[in-house]
Length: 156
Image (cartoon, rainbow, N blue to C red; front, side, top):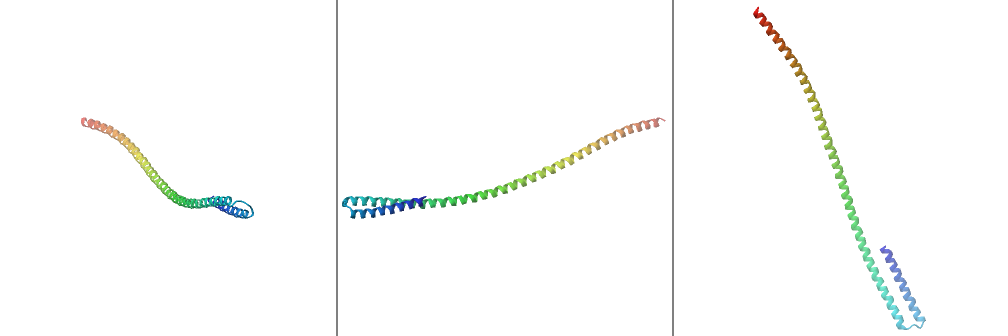
């Protein structure tokens, strides 16, 4: 955009120079007063100076915009690098979380298996206790009977 503006200004300067030359030739051919011609020439020269100043300003703006663009490119590259680094950290974090979750799940499964094993042992011990209580009851009963038989035998 700035280059196109510069080109337009160059073309306008060239056109104004051509007009200036044309007017100089017209002056020689016509009867225009010298003062009017000098005034017009000064006006054209002034316009040329203004256009040259505009051209210089446009070049400076173009340089500034080029510098700004380069800065933005560098900033964009830094941002891309930062995003890439953050994506890598996210991936590492995901892997760590999945590993922790897997370890936690494995521990929970081991605990559940141990709990089931202990429950089975408790159930077995409770059955053994019931059987022992029944046998103890029978032995008690047998002991009472033996005691009675001993008493009967003592009496005889």
